[in-house]
Image 1 (cartoon, rainbow, N blue to C red):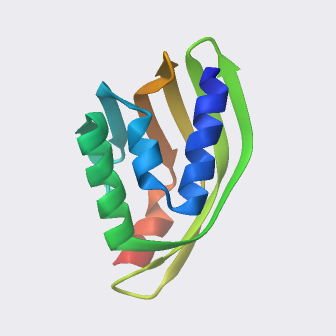
Image 2: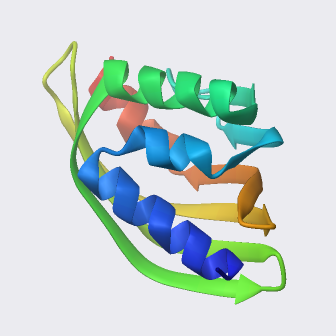
Length: 127
């Protein structure tokens, strides 16, 4: 499986809500990072840390749309771009934003994930 195919499998699993499959593709030494400005953000380590990220994401927002527009592979590095919409669980407010993710995949396992998004709209919706 190429690095791009690994990321595509992760996106397909996210669409099904199959977080255990995603965590199975995270290396023990993986760095998983999302903006600390977001309630589910921070720097996490390994499958356990990525699991904490997904638990925080689910606690903060209900994903109502997740679309992948493009995925590019350069060696071990994969760059993906798309859109996400969600509804804040506490506020009921909605937000839609574009995102880009940087992945590094080695031997079929994610060793680095960094998420970039316009956090202002998300923070406003989550309260």
